[in-house]
Image (cartoon, rainbow, N blue to C red; front, side, top):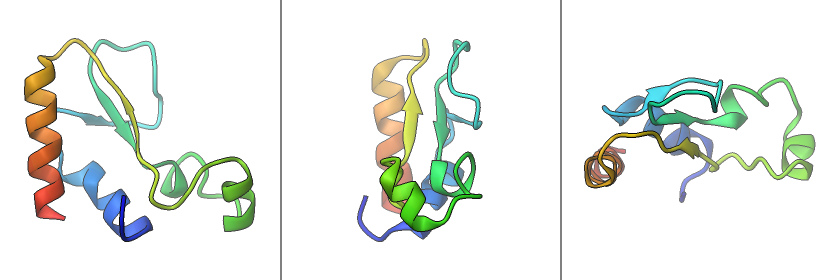
Length: 81
């Protein structure tokens, strides 16, 4: 995602169907997390980068919702950031 940490983090707030949770997996709902500001926030940027966690990285776990609804949700959220 262009723009770095701020837009990537904001995307997690703009979606409507995705749950904003740091615990990815074991759920039937679609989940979204911004690792650089949650699960990996305690690491310095150099260590996050070494782990493959970039500031503009957003992780999704797709659940059982209709795929078209999830795509629409992401598309609309991206327009708002």
